[in-house]
View 1: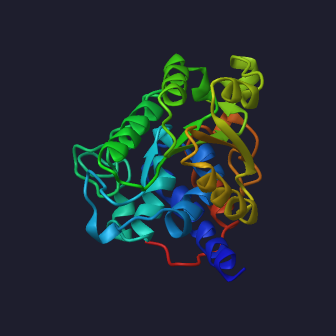
View 2 (view 1 turned 90 degrees about the vertical axis):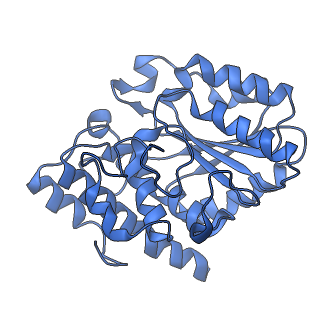
View 3 (view 1 turned 30 degrees about the vertical axis):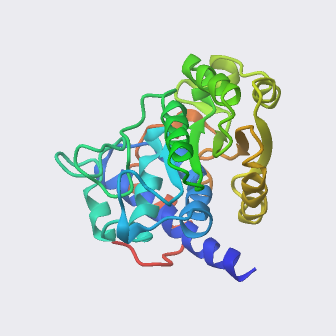
Length: 281
């Protein structure tokens, strides 16, 4: 229970970081980042076996994480900084020209924690599967994780990758789908109906789990179950129900905050929802 309390202590700070970064830059994607703050917190402070101080691009002997929906970068940069990959004060440079913290993750500037540029939707799962195959070839028993969006499931490359992973028994990968029902142009089921993602992923040969991505207890209960399912000659995917803009009442449950920064009045109202637990930068 104490570890869940600790994680719940960190997540509000991550949300404060997200809001502060996007407001300062007057550019970014707050909705999905706020909705996924809990899974990012759980991954980097509990689940992943990783070494911030000894970061290498190949990640030998470590779990690897790939962010396919790269527009959630503010959430990722927050947990990378606060888990020790780079100084927290660097968060203040988010989306500034020629800095390491670009709007979508980039490798050009050499930011520790980022192993591939991402944000061209549909591509991240393919990269993660390649990394998982490399671990198998190198007899490395650590796992590969990939976070995707639900609107991203409309991309054909996702399903090519899904078919490949199941067909080649890539059983050291865990995909996580941010299932908030919203994308940049509106509700997913109005833009292009997704149908049953559970049925689709099962039909493609994946082990499918479900969890509430805004409930830390459920995350900490479900992620070990997913890990236990690896190594069984099937890839694993988690359908993670979240609320876009979670924690900020006027941002919740709407696509309108997918890629829009708050103004000063909105920022003050939004950030007041979250206690400063670790110290702002």
